[in-house]
Image (tube, rainbow, N blue to C red; front, side, top):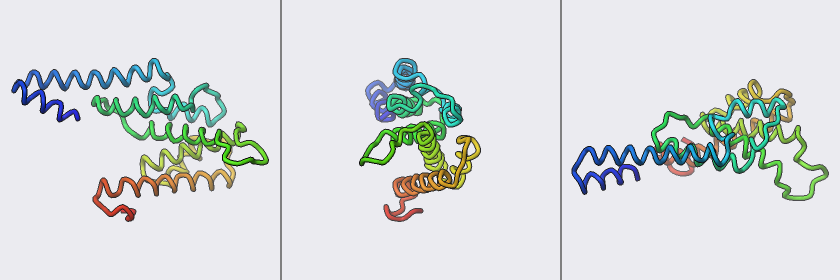
Length: 193
C-alpha cells in the first residue's frame, strides 16, 4: 500500500518533493503508532523480549510479561515498525510471542484435570516450549531451538521438558514450512520445500 500511495501522489502532482514528503509522512505515522503501542499500551512489548523471557524462565517474576495485551502490542508494534522502515528483526519478537502463547496455554482448561496446569513450574515449562517454538519458527531449526531453550532459558531440565521442547519446536517448523513454502519458493501447498 505504501507504493500505491506514493504512486498516487506522484501521478497527481508529478513532483518528487511531494512523493518524498508522502513517504516520510507515512513512515513517521507508522513509527508513531508503533511507539504509542509500546509506550501507552504495554511497556514490556519494547525491544526483542529475549532478556525478559530469560529472566522469567530463571524465576524472576515480571508482571504482564506474558499477557495477551503484551502479545497484541508486540505483534502490531513490530508490523508498524517494519512498515516504517526501522531496523528491526523478526527473531526476538517471534521468541517473545511464542513464549506468550506458551504461557497462555497454561490458562486453557479444555477438560477437567486431576491437577491444574497453572502451577508456576509448569507455566515456566510452557513458556520455555513457546520460546523454543518461536526460535524454530524464526530460524527453521528445531534442534537449535531446543538447544537455545536448554542453554539460555530454563534453569532446570528433565527429559520430559526436553521432549516437550522438541515437539513444540518441530511442530512450529512444520507449520512454518507448510504455510510459507508455497509463498517463498512457489512450491505446492503440501510440499515441505
